[in-house]
Structures are given as structure tokens and as C-alpha cells.
Image (cartoon, rainbow, N blue to C red; front, side, top):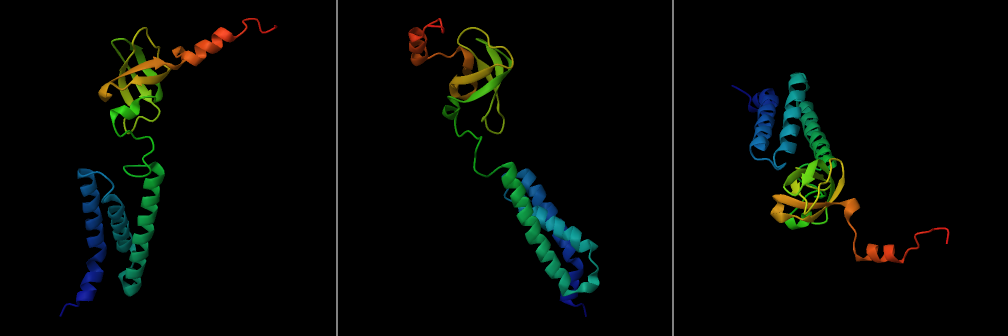
Length: 180
């Protein structure tokens, strides 16, 4: 007669390995960090279980449980540190209107007809097509998003070119000769 406990103990590492691999593949098919933490934990526990000698009996189950918990915590910590998929949401945009006022720099010279910029807090893909109202902004110049334009093409201006009413009034009131 086959002992069910012995059969489970002998095949548990292989089952954990396969379940972990299946969850990792499921994460690749439906990203969002729903399956990855558990998949990595089960996969690592399966690998550890294959290395452990089967003579330890119930101790193996305890070791595998500790490995699953420790690997889950470590994987979750790394995900939070890298801010992947979920997390505090910093550096992510919720809609095109949230791009207004963002700063970045020019990666491809921006003209009234086109160019490319990289925003500091531009989300998962921070590169955007951009244009200016007038003139050209050279590569490497710092920019400010003036109009998100629905998120497809941003209207930007060089930060150095921006002057508001307060700046103009201050400039008019200054004495051009600092010796006076």
C-alpha cells in the first residue's frame, strides 16, 4: 500500500517547482504583480526541496514553509524598492492633464513641427513627442510642459525662455549698474 504522506513528501518539491513556474508564466501573460511574488516563492521552495535529502521527513516541510515565507517577503521588498507595477505611484501619470507643468529635457531637438523630450516624472515610458510654439529648443535643454495636448504631442518651452509678469516687473525695477 502506498503511503499518501510519503507520496506527497516525495513529490512536493516537484509540485512546488511546477506551481511556481506556472504562476511566473501567468504573471508574464497578465502583468500586474498578482502572481509573481507567490510564483517566485514556490519556485525557490521547489528548488530547495529538490536539494534537501528526503530522510529529514517533517523537517523538510518546515524548511520549505520557511523558504516560502522568506522568499515572499524578499520578493515583495524588492518590488516595493523598485516601485514596479504597484507601490506609492510616484513618477506615474494618471492622465494627460497631469503632464502640465512637468519638467524634463530635450532628447531630440524640438521645433514647431516635432522633436522628443524625456520628462522627469513621465511614468513608465517618460519619452514624449513634443513641439514648441516658436523657435527651436536644442538637445539637452531643460523644458517645461505648457500644454499636454491630450498626451500625444506635448507643447513645451525651454525653462530658460520662460519669463512671467513678476520676472518682467523685477527686471524693470532693477538698477542695471550694481555699483549704485
